[in-house]
Image (tube, rainbow, N blue to C red; front, top):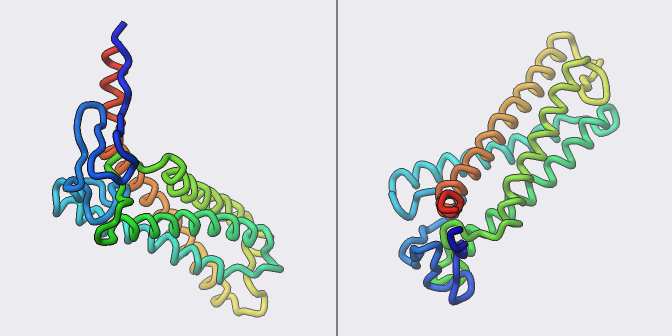
Length: 212
């Protein structure tokens, strides 16, 4: 049986100038302006990473802003189910977004000693990002499904004092917000997972498994 190798061995704490990972060295020069989980290949292939960063940031902004707008359309008393789902979903995605923003600022700050070598973000941090968006997305989907069963229930309330045309417009606006929110969150999850896969230790793990 092949001798099991250590995935990575650090001689200094995370954020030091060098980190040896399964036979290759990640140096300060290989760390981009933003962390790898935001940019993917920004630190290695310039333009490709720059475009990826812009798209990733855009997806986050759409997800967070549209989610906030969804909450402003929900009547707390008349649609308690939708309101509870929204509060839970928006709370977790906002936590993930704030942590991501803080991590990016710390990483990008000139002279920072707390940069993230590629593939070396703490697992709990990646969980806050990815699982937070997944939970929020799930509540969006549940709200969309529940709201399709009627026009005046716990999940989809339209003011009866509005004209028929105004009620149709309100329903259409709420559905469109949910659609945009769902699409943006799927994209955010895709960006995070692909950046993690590209820059993370996945390939080295696969090599070790193959050798055994």
